[in-house]
Image (cartoon, rainbow over all chains, first blue to last red; front, side, top):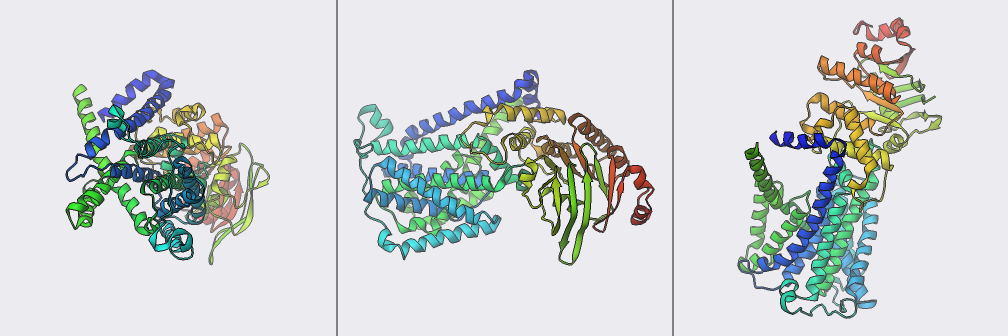
Length: 360
Length: 251
């Protein structure tokens, strides 16, 4: 209550400009988020690689950025628009295959590979979105799952000659970035400590870009309309907005993020596994996003870190690592429905309330 | 003629919910639709605003056939609807509610502006602020809509419907569940909207006092069919109407 009166008084004096001031404040926070993401990619490896049982390899850190891009995009759909897709492996795996085939047959330029992967995912998302979004709720989830599994079996069987079938696609050839910068080339001195090598700059750079794009989308008219659709779809329709198109836009945007991530994963792994199209991949991204906390941008990032840590590090120490993951998921969802990031924001607002309480 | 329905009919299986209803609404000539429970009042409005598709019949808006169009297309043409239950965005602030409504009004039904900052849309923010001020909700703009008192929620609901500056506004029992004081305020508000904004209002109501205060014409529905249509004085003396209500309501 005290917080509300606090907020209302300065707004009163500012009068007409009050609204704009508020939005200016938000705009400032936008650049704040991007600066935060840049600081994160510099500091994160130093902390993460020193966690218990970590063997010190950078590859996992890069993998976290790639999955985080996937998760951020997925949350734009699940957390903001309120649509649960159970077939996002299509965009991740489909774009990964497109990236692999493109690298083997056309060009190995990393930026072009990512572009091709993104465009592939956008086209797939348009088609599957148009077909699936006609139904809501559980039917939408099942339809996306069905399309996902269809793609999996198509890649496994009829297209086996191109995709490598069960063995996956092994012909990935990645050229140096912009024709000159070998991804494995390390930096010297301070730059080496902070940014490691060209490959790291590529993956971390795309991660920062993804955060920037997501923050911008959330603070654009789309962000407001997505949230409104999640809360009361019929009302949005009766405000004169074409809900169906906005949902499709959310689906395609989310697919585009998955496409960038899928392309980067092909570059990173130099291989495409058929499992990238399997429904378990779709499930993983749901778990990652919910674990981290839906309806935020850094929530999915937190979820990715926790998930990949358990999957890759804990699994080396404990044979029943899936049980650990399950226990972690159940505990978080049960005790903190807003996810791991929700714990952080919860603490933050408690501290703020305490401070405000002391003031007055 | 602002709005006209011709032989509007809706059947759900065996049940005829709306039976060949003809309504005429002139600009500035506010209409009340009354009738006993289950008379088909809400269904009629839902047929006009696009929530339901009529089985037969036509809806003409400014002479143009809008039958079977999507709700967002109909809203974009200047028809707006306020729901019987406060249909708002409960977890968003009052301001955010108004902003979403203003987006629908300023931007058309869809726009590819997902990389533009909402904060740069001065027209949208101004409209949102104006709407909140008009409806006396500006002081509460940072409050989550779900924590508003009931009367304020209904006012926010009406604000959402009004943000698009409609020419024709459907109000579905705007005072249902309100205290006498809140009802009084709401009726004042409706009269003000009529006068200041020149909105033509179609009101669905039970409360006769409100109906006589607000409407220029009254249409009476019973069992899906229109049984009378005229000025409040004409309706008061109509024997069919007396019959339909069987003394349930004194008119």
